[in-house]
Length: 77
Image (tube, rainbow, N blue to C red; front, side, top):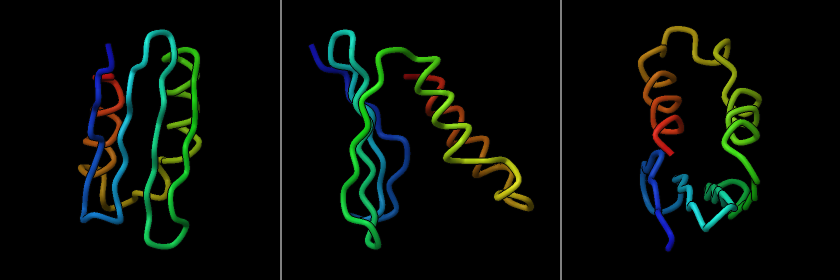
């Protein structure tokens, strides 16, 4: 059984989804600059470690609400 979570979606090119496929967590990031990038994680702590590296809080200075919503979406996976 696959559970799909949408983290954010700005348009059809800028979006991020996470699928839980049994013991694997597959993250797909689609951007208009880089195309599609896929990451596979074996645990939620590994996913959250990647999230902290990918979305450092310092880059969202003045946009804390956006950062909080992204982190909250990942925590629901």
